[in-house]
Image 1 (tube, rainbow, N blue to C red):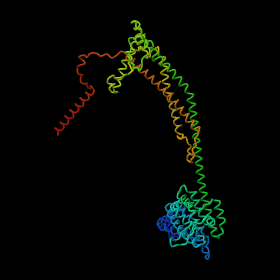
Image 2 (image 1 turned 180 degrees about the vertical axis):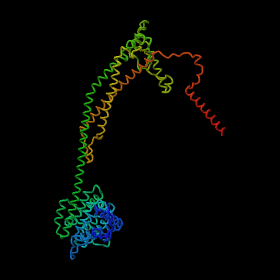
Image 3 (image 1 turned 90 degrees about the vertical axis):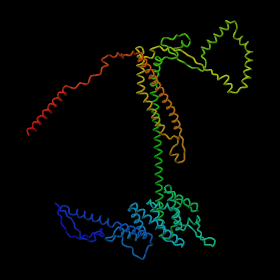
Image 4 (image 1 turned 90 degrees about the horizontal axis):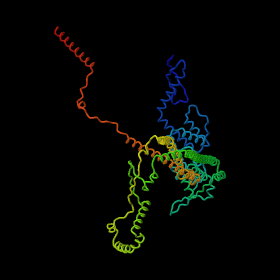
Length: 616
């Protein structure tokens, strides 16, 4: 049950003083939980008031931030008593930060960092730009104080806030990197790192940097140089302008000491006043923090490089292990594949005729049968048997005539020599085209016709060779289902292992560091991979050749079997009944009865309607 009552109540909430300001509110009270509705109503009023005052609050934030920056760089007032650390009743957070900034620069710096950390991304960039502009203005003031040989804490505060914000704010680092040369110049001038020569008529005032001894004696200059060195060392890779600025300062004669020397120099030169010593200690601690951050990043990069190197070593070991397993599998399965293919080759030799079966035909002792075929071949040289036979026949003819072939050759040498001399003289007077036109092109090629009997049924499947055909069929099925997929899988794994390795054979981490390290085991791995790839290619070619032989054998056998089968289709002559036109399609008698009945019903209905009209 909900009871709604109206009552006039004055709320005095110090924390929300600006929102309510002692107004009378209408509240809703529930009997079970009266405070829940009251707090919900207060939160709703608070959100609406904040949305109404949002533009004013943004301006107030910028103004309060500027007051914090001014309070940080403001000189202390020893005559005034410091306010109480306790926040006064009804004060806001901005007022509390302003009160804290009035107490000490350290409190103001903490308040500045807290405001930057709590702002949004756009607001943080805007506030960072304002504080950077304030740092530049006060650095110029510190430069004027350095010209007047004044020792105050302004420069130390500039160095301290620069180090703190550079370490924590990305936006501030981007601003410093964008204006690195001018910003370093301001810091060095504020530290007294330049000497002004007297003005002359020929040229105006000239600035010269301090000598090495003078630089070592200047504590503020050592702070700036240490800060610049720490920035360049920690963020030089990300912001090249920082490293370039440090290198330019070295070329101009500024001596950057190591971290230990800089710490000793800062410790020795800390007698220039209590304020300067305290600010120098804060700046040196900031420099140490920046250098520590750079060391952490360097350590992280080294760990990442070590992880990459370990990952590459693990990948290399895995690749070698896969190659060893693959080689072992090939070694175990190769004898079985070779034996199966060898048995099929021997079966092919029994079924398919070879030239050795026709050695008698080549000698001239065989006759072609009824099913003999003719094969024509073109040879570039002479057949030895035919040539020997022709020479023996010529010698027999010479012996019958009573003249030896050698004697005839001797008798004809003189005439041949005379004819050769005339031919040479004639050829010497002709060019190449005339020689070709007169004598033509000569060739030693000739055409030889050999009759090879192809006995019927030598490659056909029959009861005699049924065992061989069945063995070949099982072997081809085994090759297609097992051996060819196995070899294809081996080749795929070998390609994956070979492509996973660096093609140049160079360690990627070593190449990144400028060091090329060749490995002997990787070269051996390449050699073994190439040998294994050649073995797999040879196996696949041999298996495919065996399958193609079986396909040719089966195709030829099937063609011959179909040619030997007599046609079983008999064509009969046409008769008179075939020439008559087909009768029209007959209708279903049941459908015809239904149609007649419906027609009779329509007639009866029409008659009854006509009689009714006449009766009316």
